[in-house]
Image (spheres, rainbow, N blue to C red):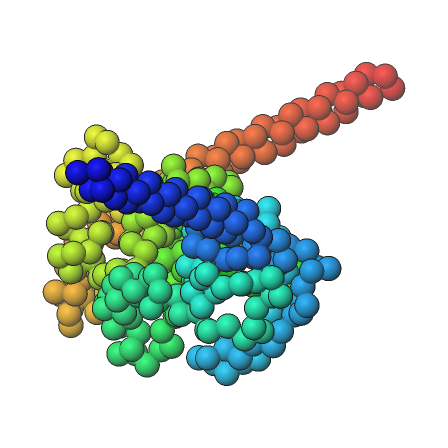
Length: 350
């Protein structure tokens, strides 16, 4: 019995000793990894920013990069402005360098890292769902049918970057957040570069007039707030955000009391579009040959709005012209009477 008790005591002591050693080892290891700036771990941008925000610590400040799609050669700066970076879409607290540069995860950076990292594929790594939605949208299908170049991710996101690298290049790293007012403003111009007529008509409605004054916060809708960001569909499609089935939901996201009557408003009024007035005149000229087209044009809410607008401008023009003519005639009458009065005064003087 004494032997068994002694053996049990020895085994228990060894077990406690091994557990203590393991605990100490784990604590020390975690402390070393956590405190060491030379080890890159998921969830820590410190080791990366320590070098890439300090020009003196960078072995190479710039490098040539070949654009895989266009084959264009660009000079890319490896220096990061940490203050600006933290305000961008990729600079949040829940986003880390190793999310994109995955070959550096857990790497020892005490002597830096290899100069050529694996190319970053935004679609494969993170944005596969938005990419699929975009490529399957009628927006892209229509452009392909008309043999037009389909915009890539960079044309809208990277292309709208207004914060430049130290060498004057736009960088995906500095892509601003979608809620950034300046980013939202530039988005309007980006869409308008292809859809000029819609941009002009957008400026004629309440939304466009407010954004034209510089108010481009999330309180005022820009193009993608109504039409969608990636899954842009024709209004005739059921899933379209501006289609009959979802327009009430789209407007209701901002206008809590929106109803069926509210959504009948004309989002893109053509009141200042000369082309639309030419269409009206053409329909009138061809009324005998194509009466159905004339009926279709006259039933269009745009036509009613344009007629009301012309009448409104006509009334304003007539009113102010009448005031102007009345004032002019009054001035002539006053000048004539003054001239006669001076003439009589001169005769009496002589």
